Amino acid sequence: MGTPHFAVPTLKALAASRHELLAVVTNPDRRKGRGRQMASPPVKEQALEFEIEVLQPASTKDPALAKALTALAPDLFVVVAFSILPKRLLEIPRLGSVNLHPSLLPAYRGAAPIIWAVVNGEKETGISTFQLNPRIDAGDILLQRPFTIGEDETAGELEARLCIEGASMVVETLDGLEDDRITGHAQDAQGITRAPKLVKEDALIHWDRPAEEIRNLVRGMNPVPGAFTHWQGQPFKIHRAQHAEGSGPPGTVLRADGREGPVIACGTGALLLHNVQPAGKAAMEGTAFVRGYPIKVGALLGA
Image (cartoon, rainbow, N blue to C red; front, side, top):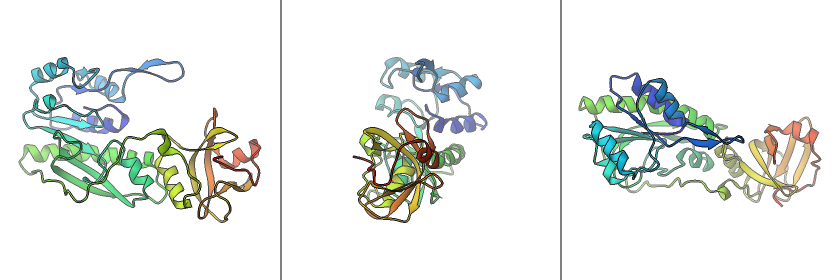
């Protein structure tokens, strides 16, 4: 059970393993892009390539889904980046359900663990496989593995690493369960932190914050939704930034050199903007932005 690209490596790993895949459950096709053409979820595209049956319920509460899954008589559900399963579905597989979560649970329970770990400036995160129960991300831990977060690594880059490592660990988990080498253990109730679903305001840059905090926000929101501020009354996304020398009123353009790029004052410190995206335009290098747009020293971002 899964939908986005993050779940595809796990599907591939399971298809190549000793375990039999009976079906794949994913979200319905949806319209995407400017042309609003119907597009299939990445997991569906991969499943069809493997000639695996695909179920696309409008809701996990659809009685038809429960009926179809019951008829398959599965031993186990594997869930990666999918909807919350109601109790009725959790009762179907004989051996329960295994979920892959990109954090060291109980840290960062929730919908966006990778993004929030980077935004919060964590130096380490990890992956966990655990047994699903009716409480969100609260089931018994099966396997865990820590990973260092790179100093300049973005959430997208970290996700690309974790989904590959996670796929391997899912197969390792299933092998261990089948061979009775793995048993679950309860999560530490003292270490719970949250990683809630993002809202638009989470990506808004507050220039009165320290430069490092803003840099981490930019890293965490890359590639989507993109950290943003405002310039000339329009949204202005910042995709990459690094520390720079300088100080001044927060949000002020300290330098606008076409060979360096724009440097913006923060609450403490300053940031050099390496990659930006004006409203309605494609992302571009900060140097190209300075050369092509009328941004001047003393201008204010975020006003």
